[in-house]
Image 1 (spheres, rainbow, N blue to C red):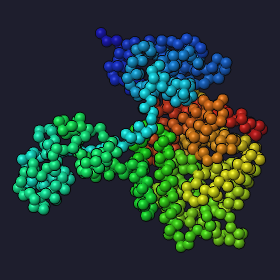
Image 2 (image 1 turned 90 degrees about the horizontal axis):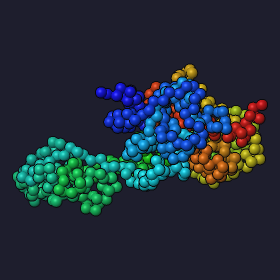
Image 3 (image 1 turned 30 degrees about the vertical axis):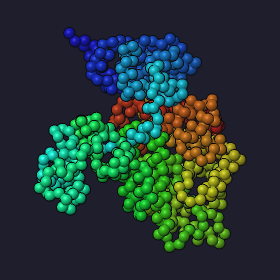
Image 4 (image 1 turned 180 degrees about the horizontal axis):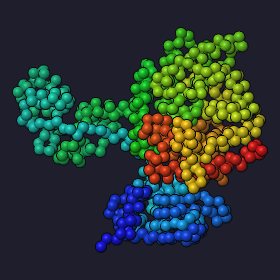
Length: 640
């Protein structure tokens, strides 16, 4: 007789992570051990510092509020499908929060002793749980908990970026083998190769590779008259064949071909000639794979002669980005690689444009990229934000010099648009006179923003102060940076205004952890990921790093990592912010690639439960960092 209660439990759990990663048999066995618990409103599940239970919990109906004992403030609310009470499973510690029913609630208590073996053997389950546990530890990769999942030491090689990069380009080989036997006539071999439009044919003995014949063999051995076309395949084949296992990287394939001076590799089940042939790899296949290798893309960018060629290379960069995300390469590493390629593309456009100008630049200049590209966070084809900073010239030559650089800026922006970078809707580009100044003028403009911090000045500061040198004189940018920091130090009230600006972006969530969506306009009912989640954490990093007078760190995650060094007492929060910024950037990039847009506006009904949980997990960190800057920079006093 079937256990209908356990069936209902399994039917519920299979819709939510991490249980959706279990197979039906595992879920069925686990559901038999689950205990159903009913909690009245305000009744306690566990208290702070209570000894760990033998279970962790899943909300079936209702909601659970998580609070600190010394505060009445609700830190988190778990609703349908949410997992909580993981500390006994993951850290073998007493509870750090109190869990209380927010309303009448039904819980599923999952026994740790039955669940733990499943989690240990299923990587997807383990990853989800350690991230869920991080909701209360803030940083899922904190030193304290790193490598201690379920009390088992993790394999540190899994987190080694260099190991992942080695496997980043798995070889793609053809599995449609064109074959013949040793006795097949050479004329038939040639006809078969032409019919299938291939450059090689395998000579087989049953399923085993006996030899290989390539185009080169036909040219050098048959077309020259050394062997008659009526001869057999055996007479011209290369044998024994050089075989490799099918688990091969592009780098290994390159080395194998160079080592043996061959253009084709035969792949077998175990890499030997005594195993079944499963595929064949040509030098052409390797070259195609290398088209999405960052080093090859960088060389192609440097050799490009026009923006149309760069646009086609840009497609390769997007393919590379897609591959990185599919293989779950750390987003920090991905950002560095894609940013280098973006900067190289911009630099090449500038070089091409300079060559097309009738005159050379009258003085040294610097091309500054701002916004997401300036921070090294522009992974998708978002709009341009750039400026020109040129060397001081005598007053009588200023406008003539500016005219030259405006013309240059206009042409560069046009070419960047051809490559795929949209024009800035607010015209914050070097083609605009407001973003094309001499060094002295930029010093005056930025000092005005700092000394007269109205809403517009704060907005402009927020955009401009993330600038990065993409081309030209770094010395000019360094001198401007020194001027900005000097003025900010002499007018500390500016930081309060900048912090106030960082508080203007609306909260990502409302009552009961609901996403706050757009109420009207083109994106009605969509969640604005940039405005409500990314910008608050980016803006907070900017004002905090500026308050420490730290130069040359523009990337948001790296800013928080530096802040964690500078302020050990806030280390955990800053590392959580670093993690959240990378998680949000990765989420936006995935959404942008999925929908072929900027990834800014998210249709919540198209997200699954796991995606919503991961997104919501960052909201608490956003709230905490905004609270910190509100207190530190006395924003409330400014608003009075």
